Length: 106
Image 1 (cartoon, rainbow, N blue to C red):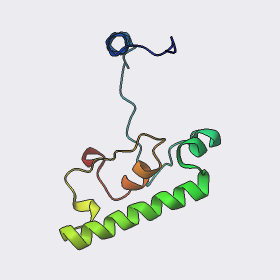
Image 2: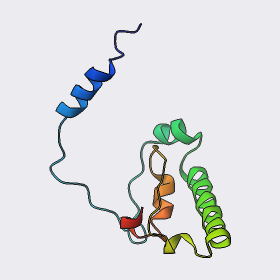
Image 3: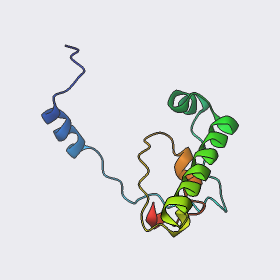
Image 4: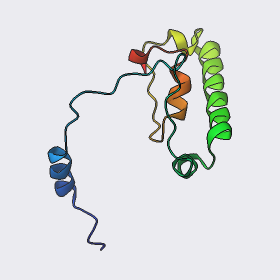
């Protein structure tokens, strides 16, 4: 087994000892200021594309999700009390969700 792989117990302790943020970063109002982008290589590693192509795909996904919500819940995403974004990438879909959705609902 690769020695760099830790046991679950070692990971628990390492995570618990990790540095604590002094303050949470502020939520960015994406309709006023675009958040900075990660490097192109990071974008491509997560989604296979970057910048315009990656954002166009994210916008399309959020548009389809909003249409689905309208059709099956009789209300769009903006009216949702809570939306769980299961992504763990660099935030391209979350950025588009923050346009119609309150930050506290995402």
